[in-house]
Image (cartoon, rainbow, N blue to C red; front, side):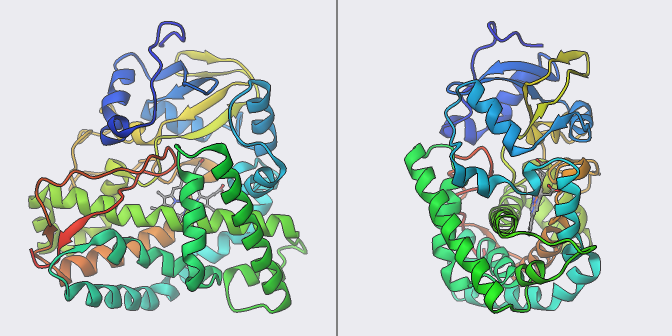
Length: 407
Ligand code: HEM
């Protein structure tokens, strides 16, 4: 364990951290799987680095997530975060709730992501993919982020939720601010208000005139006579929109970048596209789209590994670090699409396991299969390219990825 006074505070921001966060995680790992640290501007917290410990923590019901208690904890410890009513209302969604509320909210959307529903989406996702790759093919050089990795999942989530694609610029700009680590509180506050008002209007429009989409379905369908109230609908729409926007984009982009940096694995996958689903699990393990960690707090004292964590403490489970724990994965810091990446926590674990995972996996499978088939010689536009990683702790994503479709 790293003692809070003795441990050098680690700034989890800035280009150096984002260029190679694992350099920092490895430093922690060398001293044990669980750490007590003080982040600059934050409050004393616990960080779980180990895979076994992280997975156990994600499934531990004594580690809670509800936003009301979490905000009180932040306020009590004088952390600099937004705790105003609009922020709290938007954040009071399923990912920030505990049973029984969580169970109830999750039940409302679970069936929307069931295998049969996902299979029905396949032809449309393939069509969108083919259209984007057609557009890419007329260029010698193109930003894969703008041309493909971003518009594919964004179009799909907009169509699924029934959010007008034409309005994406607004909510993408707000989302970017909300997942960023570097923005001033005033900027975050403005984005929160903008997003909240937009979603309220959207929900009201669907209440007045329902469409054939997931949000309209949530307004009008009741599970066991239950119904979401307006506030719950807005928070649900917020969660699905943000989660559906900023994650799969980076699975496609980070995975492509990792493959292009490991050219022989690109070639192997091109020769045997049946390996795509397994490769996607390895992309998730190696450089998944969720930033460094997910947060919980202790409802009562718990023991993680050999460490006692008192009640009322913040606990970060470092997903990216757990996924490269050499005690669990031989490939550790290397990409190996033939390795067994099962058990990774890129989608979380336990009751909050990503409800959108079947959609993300489907989109990624279609995207990589089509990309390899259509552009077998795809390559980085410049072999010296160094990604500019977003300054975000929630999202692990590049600003751009210039490629040459025909090599
Ligand atoms: C939860 C990752 C795509 C919706 C989660 C969690 C992770 C995650 C790590 C759990 C967080 C925690 O325990 O604190 C990812 C990754 C994705 C992805 C890596 C893409 C590669 C999506 C998509 C959607 C979605 C496409 C929706 C359209 C959700 C929701 C939850 C969630 C609603 C909350 C589940 C709950 O609280 O029970 N995701 N996600 N995700 N994700 Fe995803």
